[in-house]
Length: 232
Image (cartoon, rainbow, N blue to C red):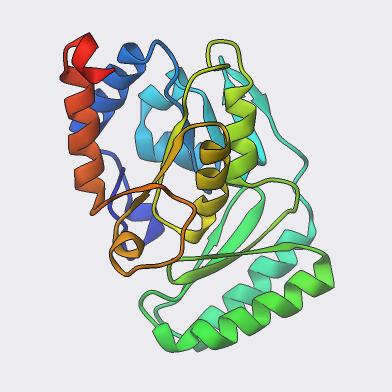
């Protein structure tokens, strides 16, 4: 729903997007959910107070919150070693960023693309050394605790009261969203691939596509505002 930024910390939903989420939650009678690779704390900072009113899954399915109840594993201490190793590499390649999450550490090379190969090589080494999962994304590689993905998040959400038997529609723009697309499709719904990957012909489990986050917001705004019969 939101445009990327060179600095991940610079991504924030504006007032219009927050109102849109509130309207959608009301229109869908509570069946709207946020699923992200960001931590729950990061999601709250990005989305604002409306996030507290929604079912939210963070850290690629490893943690979630529903009706104020949090479920999350213990953070592995080895992630501190990963963060230190990534920080050392980032010092060699100015412009790279290290993003620490609740259950993972991401290395961003958007502003220093030549760092991609050494970053990926380091990630493979650290993943093997510490039994962590490698997650590739847009101009980044992330090492995170194993045990979750966005497909698992979709399946968990669709097993909740009020969602059983409904049709999931999952929006995403990155490789990390492919598991969510596949899960939505397996449950009789759709994955919607957004942005650059939708335009460059990348292989995907999504069944639909939109050109940009702005197009996503426009579509959802139209759905929220449409008469009930037309929206359905």
